Image (cartoon, rainbow, N blue to C red; front, side, top):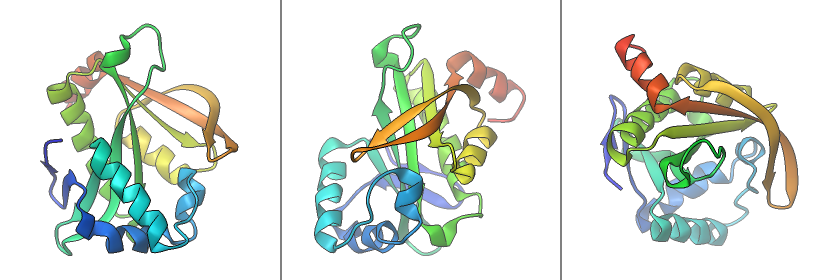
Length: 183
């Protein structure tokens, strides 16, 4: 994937050397509850997941420029959430941010850049994003990024099912946001 850059972040492919930054935030209580994956109980779990990120090339490492440190991730996942759109023209954005960096607008900054990249360069027709019903932080990021509410549903992860909310942003809606200076 192409490296992306915002004012405060570099969004780049994962490297094996990112393992300790990744483990640092993925092992913290409060992160897995928001994302649906289990805490990284040891560095071996982190190593396995990091290998998957590197091999699959769909997940960005979010690097905070001022610290040159990985503080989260953002991925483009293939989804067929709506039959009104071609399956190969849909993606779902998923993300996680180190708890130590919550409340600074960093994830909104990353998601907005990811949206631009998805529509302008990947050439998707529709983007999806969702959150567990109780994850109010993700809800704010999604809304501030221009997505509109689509439906309620469930999210399954590691043999658990959660109530979830889904949001959509179409290429046409993105163009309107650009014209209004809100993208």
